[in-house]
Length: 181
Length: 301
Image (cartoon, rainbow over all chains, first blue to last red; front, side, top):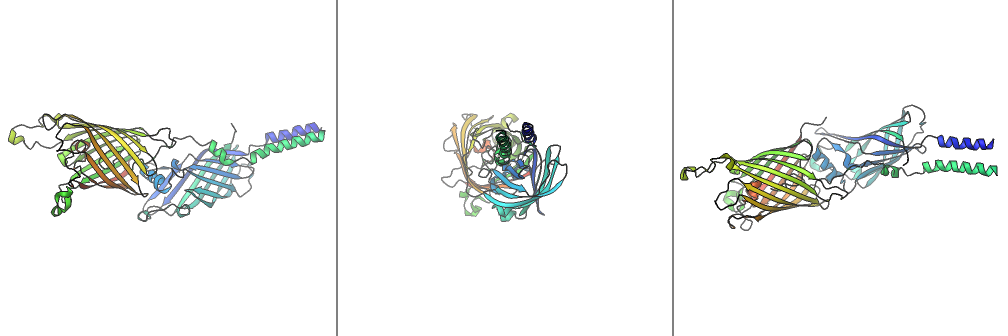
């Protein structure tokens, strides 16, 4: 009887859903809108990782993987604004504030609070969005505004009309259970 | 005994949980990041430095409209506003790259009515991880002068009787390295061939090595310099000189502005490499600028 219980215990734990989810597809984009010019770029090389037991989420974003419409703009972004060789990554470390039942196929409105470090600066950000668990996968979508001056990114006076002081960042990713190698 | 066994198994089960919840997510992200080759960007700001070609090519689907201008000699005096009154040389060009590695262009400079067409191919690119320590770019250009033989009437002979005689060629291998955020240098062996040269004892082929460097002293300003050493030539030593230039690269949003002093009047490679006719010593230099505006063609999305 007791042996049976032990086996049951082990069985439960072994079959518990994987707690670590990792992104197989992630799209992070930002949009800067001014009357003069709209600038946008997309990054598909970021790797978000989610721990569903603690609700912790980490996203590591390689700065040089932001693709712009114009390559000259991309060069300027990396060389003059983000200094990508010095600061190659942006990292978000945070936590989803709501409790989510990851076994239910529902769309949860959530917010995530955490620190975004970028360009040598670290600031607290709140990301609003949705978490949708679906067929063993988790779809996360989120949006937030990012103030360039918070991250010591300086815009030359001449270009103030072309670059917004606040840019809209949006994230869309599908996470899958992480299998350790 | 049995209780102990249960306890141990429960603890063991918890440890499985523990190992998952205490895991460093950043560590996992690091291990699973997509391996993409990071190329060193902006070894130079532009496809040209002053006169010389740099290792850079235009970006993907980029059309570049380039205007290069050289004023007259500085030593032409105050009455000529130190060369600003002219005579000036201007080159207008359209250059394009579809894939960001191979670029081509056509241009025309007013001096010697020189038409040019070139191809430039970026063979190797320096990577951030240092596995590829340098960039290597191949450059091949051909030139066609549309000028008339001014001595045709006097000596009854047209030196451009055959149009092949109007043509000349320049081949270069450009080897560049970005040493730091600020400092880049490049070395380029150059081969110049003229189908027809001026004097009977002049040789059609000449060789040169160009050294070019830039130092960025602010985010948008860089000081640039270039020197073209004519390794092998056999024309009169006192008639032509090595080309030397000093300048600034200034970048503004969508374009690059380069302003400089150089002793070369010609802008085309076949002109300034072998035939720079004035020297720095007696202020045989001039003010010049390259102005570039890029367009995305076709525009993405």
